[in-house]
Image (cartoon, rainbow, N blue to C red; front, side, top):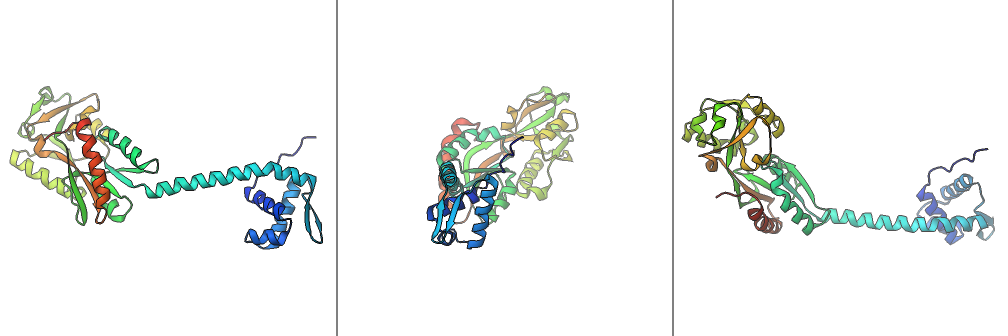
Length: 308
């Protein structure tokens, strides 16, 4: 005859049993456990039925552990100690997570740019630190809502009501051309050289400050492209450029991406179009901003491409 397997262990029930075994009195045990006596009695009965043994002998003055009850108590005590230790350690993890900041990282730069900074942030704030990657306008909204404590964003950017610290790290924009365009053979262009070409670009409502900034540079350079709606994902955009559908303008760090069918070329107006790293926090969080700014200024200029 095959022996029936035990049901999954109920740690709460085992904890109840240990308290009853210590008190040897159901009323006192129920008081310790902040519960009524009848449900506690039912839990002990179910445990006895599951194990197939008698755990207690009941008499007028209370309870006495049977030999089987002593054995069960000896078995479960280390498990309950381990459960208590695990609970305390998990509470410490939660407490650390609650005290560590949530820091945003803009997707305007190629994410490898932030790798050295990320390592330092985790070293300073511990494993409770959480990073949120998103577009700069979305990070502005998240900081305003209190879901992100501070965010590294790309400037220029609309940030009313927030504390903004411009950093020294900046990147020019590069022209990313389909490899089969004749202009791809030249490594440097003026925007006017690409006038009339299809350009993947974003809608103004998505990023008005940067849209207006680039519009002024385009107008000054005499650059009037044929605008095409830009895909949200960088890999999709690069694929469509490789297919010859149009060109794009990317921050210089994206040139680290190797993609067949596209060519990164510098622009005379690249610095004018460029983006600068900034740090945003809600008013009253200036101390956090200063701390993060010092880390970024210490690390990024020596580890990432920066232009003046």
